[in-house]
Image (cartoon, rainbow, N blue to C red):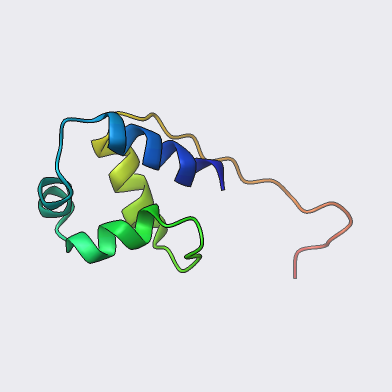
Amino acid sequence: MAAISLLSVRFQASQLSAREVARLLGTSPTQLYRLLDLTNYAKSLRQLLSLLYLLGAEVEVEVKDRTGKRAS
């Protein structure tokens, strides 16, 4: 997931501590580290988007039809 590696790079480059970022997100430092963990796939999209925004990233979401699949 490219957004996760972007998160890690931006977080490390920021002047913010893990405690400060967690406070701004309204979460715990432990949960922040889960968001940054590449092996943890149980992430909240809302928290990911909030963290990216906080770290100065612009996010675009694109939804496409799956090839060969019909909507039910």
